[in-house]
Length: 338
Image (cartoon, rainbow, N blue to C red; front, side, top):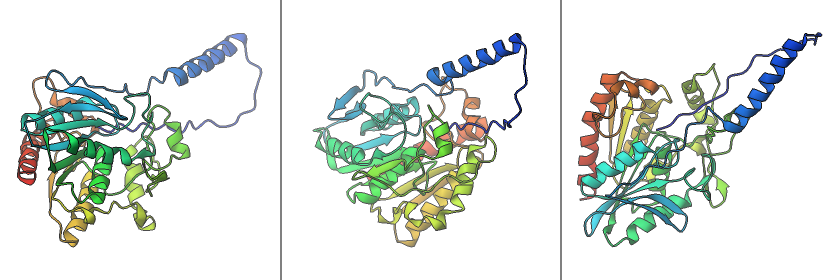
């Protein structure tokens, strides 16, 4: 799932330098050394996850693709799974892939940055052609019925999933969890100061940045405000709106109304309205007491519901949203992919 980290402004003012004792100079020198070490080690950056596919799957590294492949039965429907800004092959995305596989689908959980040396190190200008390639790879597998391929994206992965389905009329179904209705600027959790000075688009196509909506006004450490205030300016950046009206298959949206990372429910409603206005098929599941982590397979014994409250919602609200929403998502793909 998405964990954007921004540096707070230091608030340091210029002061006239005055002579100080050797002890104070030693402290200053130590702080400078500690700062340099921190820049090198980057203790604030989350560790890039690369989940083990286990005995049911296999790691693939094929012509630039990196992912966990879970083959189903002969001519089975297939789903491409895209995680969020955690990058790599996150455990959350992989858990979704395993659950979909257990439900009878062939599944490719795809890494699109951070899991291999040849991949982008952070989420900026990721080539959308990679997702086209992943779908083509799925359709070419002997286990897959090429006419029954869907995609699921969570958080930042929802941007990629919706862009993919908007441009590929043969995508049979798409699920967007805690989604975005627009393309945003990129994210760099390892060098977060770059986000202050400005990153390019999260995505590129044909070597050019995909038009994006800049972040809004920073108000302290609250990342949510960057997105909320950014959305206030969407009328000035209509080219950043994802053209979801071009999606030909059914769309399932899920969000938590207490999402504290970004306004996933307002953005999900924008997607729903745009699809409905153009005669498409869409369903929105909005959970009152859930946050950004209230999507995915039901909570098991290995996960404390309180751990899900980090990005909004209550422990019980997130757990109940997962218990209600995930079976509906499995039913959605079962119906849409036959």
